[in-house]
Image (cartoon, rainbow over all chains, first blue to last red; front, side, top):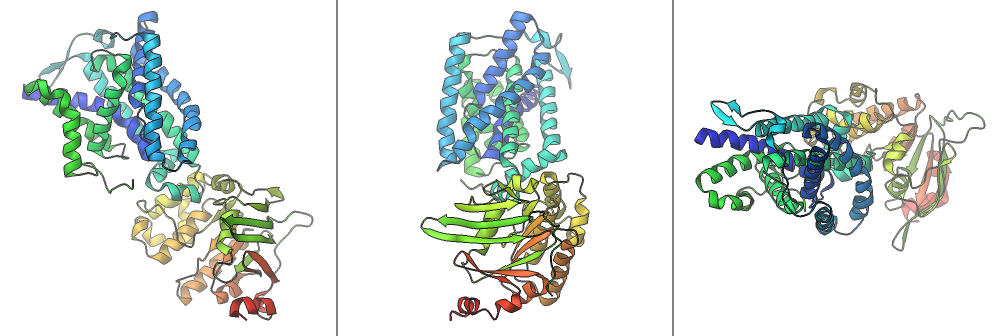
Length: 291
Length: 243
């Protein structure tokens, strides 16, 4: 029971790391909290659901296509919203209002289009039978989701630490003003990060019918809150700390569901409060951010 | 030592500043300043505190938008372009207070500059060696002393392969032997055809490297010529000594 909870927690934790990754990347680069993050995830989930039910396309293929689509949506959306926001007096505060509004719009349109009932994709489309890990058996979908999450995190790591644009992205994350004045094209770097951020949400969205059981148009807000808890645990603005935050969240969630199941829904808030009391920079934060 | 820059006949100067105006509220930090600069030439920009020297460099390098007048690069309007566009056109600068990425190493700082510069195949080591930072390549920029940070700023600016380099008080705080080294380095850049605008309070340093000077006061250019002549110009004397 203990081993099962721990391993399931790690699998879920990897997935939650992926769920929150894009939110943290966008925050790190733009100092903007994308409160519509969970709604982009929901759209990614409905994309996979519709393409699967209407055309019988495997969600893993949809996943690759959605990466491209969401990056391409991200660019114009960035240029439409963010530069104006940053020209305002209090971009961090106003970003909360703007993206909360965007979240509501996306949720309302999705409800109109998809209806409010719960949708799901059978887990067997990702592979047959349970998979055995360390003498414990888990649904294939969990293991596949965990593996895809690891791949996605690895891809973000390679992007940030092994590519030129990634290096510039880290420079913008570290010192935005200096990046602007020394001649880095901060808008372009930010637009790319925004595209990658919501594409990350979409990838997590494709996996969400399997990891969360079902999807609804109103799932976004809860996902955003969970993601926010995960990145605060890991540390705001440090995308790779998100993975650690996700695993801590996932393991804690599994233990709660196993031993105190009626309290499990409180978990994101409890962890959030505990971390903010004990170590406000997050477990892997290097310094207080200025806000 | 008054050498002429290598201006090709009939070609526009690499930099022409015409009647440049920059206002901060009601204060005219730049009030019609103008000068030109050719490839391979060093122009000293001198003047009392608050005369607009750094503001002038900030406008040319795209930190501020001009409120009037023109900045021409090779005869093409470049006033108000953002810094990253100007870097691509071959303009870069150093800062009075250097702005390295503090959490990154010297090598990473220069690599970043190469990544947004004009020559993505440039070798960061070349610029680090030029700036005399070979011994501290893997040190975090935050751990460098201020002279080293200034040299890192120079290496960063050069690694974008500028044709026009704006140097803001690079010499302040350096000891005499360091000053001589820096002077020689800046002069060596002109042999590559790089044009330099050097803002400096140390007139001895300006005298050592500049082909000519522009004396600024209250946002205007009040003198163009050699530093020696400037020191005999009555208006310049009045500005500097408060006449």
